[in-house]
Image (cartoon, rainbow, N blue to C red; front, side):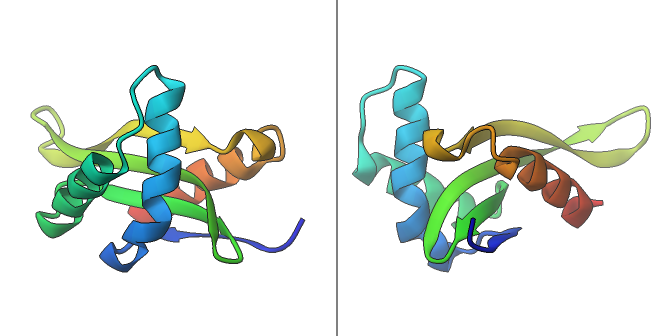
Length: 109
């Protein structure tokens, strides 16, 4: 397998992120709607409402994790809720998900 890179996505990654995010929604029974997905993700980037990490092989995004900030009253700190996590079917079982999860965790903490 070529070198896998994992990093925090930026708004410049939007066009690469839309197809896999649409696949994710379809996997869970939603109709594909790239325009609506693009608007949704644009708003998350624009308003800093979530953090998205991507697994990338060359120029293709093969997995992503989206986390939302929530707050703990007990610890008096912000914590991150992993809400969306998806790996392209052809890369499942290859360790991409494990690496994405670990790297995302390291980058946030």
